[in-house]
Length: 85
View (tube, rainbow, N blue to C red):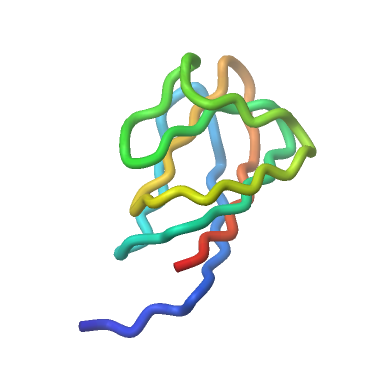
C-alpha cells in the first residue's frame, strides 16, 4: 500500500465539460479557491446545479471524498485545491 501525504495541492483547469481530480484515498477536508466562478461536486459529476464556488473566495469544507469534479457555466477557470487526509 502506498504512503500518502497528509495534504496535497492540485489544480483543475475547469471548462464547460466535467473535469475531475482523483486523490487515490479518502480525504477528510478541503480548501478550494477558483479564479473564476465554477461548480464543484464530491465523488460525482458536477453540473451547474452543483456547489457554486465564487471567484477569488476561499471555501473550507470538512467533507469526505476521493474525487473532486468541476465545471463552468461558460468560459474557463482554474480551481486550486488543498486536500487534507
